[in-house]
Structure formats: structure tokens, C-alpha cells
Image 1 (spheres, rainbow, N blue to C red):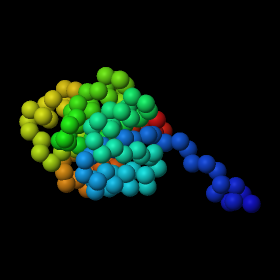
Image 2 (image 1 turned 135 degrees about the horizontal axis):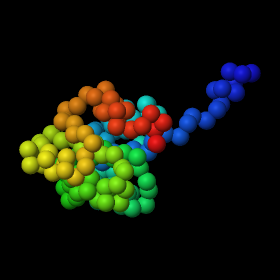
Image 3 (image 1 turned 120 degrees about the vertical axis):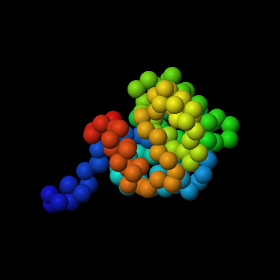
Image 4 (image 1 turned 90 degrees about the horizontal axis):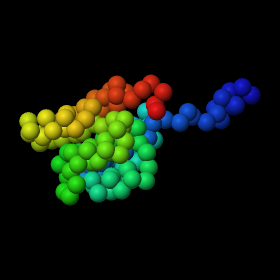
Length: 135
């Protein structure tokens, strides 16, 4: 009876993570890895969609590709920080220039991952950035 009660107890609420990338395969990979680790993951295929979500919902962390059509990941970072100064941000890129990386750091990026990254590298970065209670 105790084991049944334990199995039915709700999982603790975990951090909400917004994953933004115009490449579906990268979004899906990030969402899958983070969901399995217990995070609540919402995805957005563009910077425009991410900014719209950020105006309606709160997130503990944004993971965004830097280079996307329309609103870039750097703009997503800057708008997220303007609205939620405490939000944590990981940027991912396959084409980072020194100027772009400097701007990302100056704008408050917590981490920059270079594509291709391995799923464990992503998970380790998220676990390091977010508090242990996931909030």
C-alpha cells in the first residue's frame, strides 16, 4: 500500500524552460533531454514566437539559438532580461563571431553552447545554471 501511495504522489513542480530554435531537430533534442530530466519545456520555432510567449508566461530559463530569421537569439535574450531581469539564458550557435559572443555576454547570457553540442553538455549547463530546487 505504501508503494502505491508513493507511486501516485505528484512530482514536484520543476523549472519552466523555453527552448527557441528555427531548427526543429535542435528544439526536439533539447525538449526531449530536458523533459526527461524533469523540466517543464515549452518550445518556440522563432524569436517572434519566443517574445510573444515571454510576454504571457514566466520561465526560469531560455535556451535560444543566436542566428534565426527575424528576431535573433540576441534580441530574445535582451527582451527576456528587460522583462525578467533574473531570468537565466543559454545561447546556442554554430556561427559565433567574437563580436556576437561579446554582445551575448554583455547582455547577460549565462552560457553559450556551440553546435553541435552533446545532450549531456546541455543538461550539465542547465543544472549548473538553475538552482537545485528547479525554480
